[in-house]
Length: 222
Ligand SMILES: C[S@@+](CC[C@H](N)C(=O)[O-])C[C@H]1O[C@@H](n2cnc3c(N)ncnc32)[C@H](O)[C@@H]1O
Image (tube, rainbow, N blue to C red; front, side, top):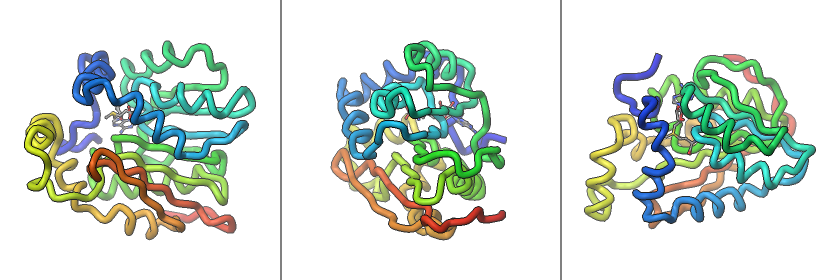
């Protein structure tokens, strides 16, 4: 069930204009930013990637260029409109697929992916749901695989540049505000991940977290 404190489950209209909105909000810099992030994920030809909350598929198309024809990408999303846009956008990549599926209940994927990616989605879940999603990522990864979380960093909202603070307060939900103070690194370590690293963007407001499932990692039961 979506939390009433979340806005991450978008309506059809919001989904239709999602990319346009992000481009406007970032003054056209969003594509460049995402390309930079994906470059840092060190994606290799032949790798398999699970994208949780894949949205319009913009990130998946960029990742598809890196995996080549031998790799595979599966994007999961709950919005029909998002999935329809993603399918159109990535139609030239036969090895990129999208499924309508909730990402917080247990998923059927077990040790199947080299990387699991979640961007601007994790902040919109209650903490017990976040644990479910992190656990799903752990289960879906092959031993030695990497989990990437692109989302808000931990920062003091009162110190945010005024226009950004206004935009954040206008568009974001209560859970996103709480996310700024949340110990996500601790949460992913508790679920068995190691080698937690972070890279910051946009004056420290955004963060790419990466964490490794230990090579000897076995499936943790919930
Ligand atoms: C803010 S958008 C981010 C989309 C994409 N990851 C990006 O960075 O452009 C959040 C996405 O999560 C999806 N979503 C929200 N709740 C979900 C859930 N419970 N299960 C699967 N997808 C969900 C929404 O439909 C939306 O596409």
